[in-house]
Length: 154
Image (cartoon, rainbow, N blue to C red; front, side, top):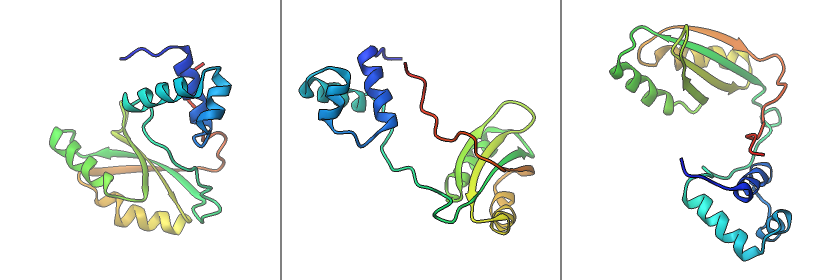
């Protein structure tokens, strides 16, 4: 892994909290010139420390109030099944995140939908039809306590 210094970490910490900050503001906050700040930022982007920029949308305001985590157990754990499952889940727009995990099941899926009826449709029409799915366990979120935590870079 490429090493970054304290100033780079400060830049990344500020960016993950405010991706719309101007170069001038960023330079003032880290105590460097705008040119030096811009050069560091370009290097951090080029070297892949920043994976992208985007707006955080309010799912409730947009009608996606139900957050659900689903444990997925596959019927077989072979490279072929893993590959087919991953390719299919990537194409499912309802899936926000999918992680292969160690433990009592194979994947943890995060999805956000309008309501429980929409989740039931997603489960029956999409999730249970993904390659290799044997069993699922659903966890509907009752309260989101923390969902936008930045990485602890400092």
